[in-house]
Image 1 (cartoon, rainbow, N blue to C red):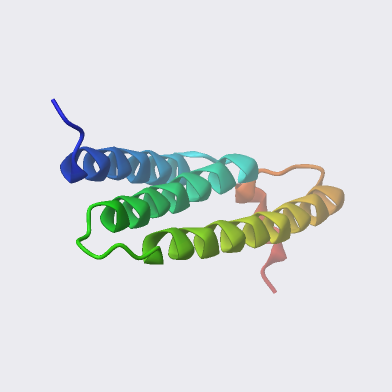
Image 2 (cartoon, rainbow, N blue to C red; image 1 turned 180 degrees about the vertical axis):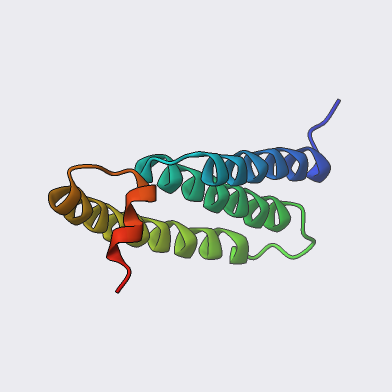
Length: 103
């Protein structure tokens, strides 16, 4: 049996679903961030898989995946800075405590 495009798409769909479930069920800020990273990795897997199985031999999928990885790293750095500031102010990273930030 050969591994084809549908196998990669099913794996990416499972990763994306796991990311959505993680984001919706976690109350801890780091867990939510991990769920977002899972969803971005599922998108990367789709980009690279479609590029691999396309008729054109260009590297477009890999380049887009590289951009997604760079954006995910920047997003993680900003989110961690926000979470550290939140922890310094409230001594917790429970996102339900964020309602005190409303003006």
